[in-house]
Amino acid sequence: MRAIMQTYKTVQEWRQTIGENIRNLRLQRNLDRRDLAAQAGVALNAVKNLELGKNTTTETLIRVVRILDRTDWFDSLAPTISVSPMAKGNLKTPRQRVFKNRKIKPKD
Image (tube, rainbow, N blue to C red; front, side, top):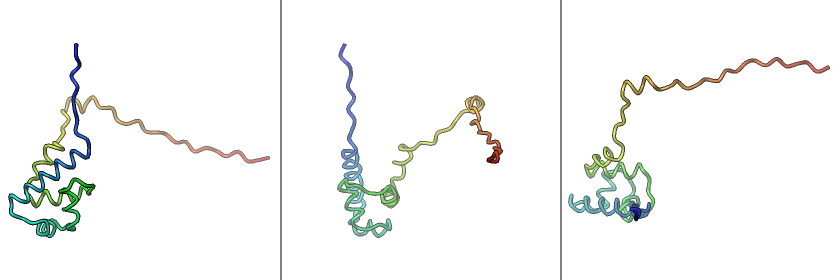
């Protein structure tokens, strides 16, 4: 039986994909990089790096995506996780350590 091999994007591939999507959204909204940077409150180089798939901060990503009105991306990235009441009842409270005062014996 042949095993099914899953392929995953590398970090660089994900950065490229996100950058391309942001660039396409920016162009759809008829914004140049300078305008997007100003509206997002980030440096022009930050927008360039983001679109080119280079390292950038999460804050820059969030600010730019908010201006492009695509915060729904984050909803799928980090959906609200809830715990059922039944599962909450099964959770154990973390064990707490007890510290006792130690008596120091005087030296002879």
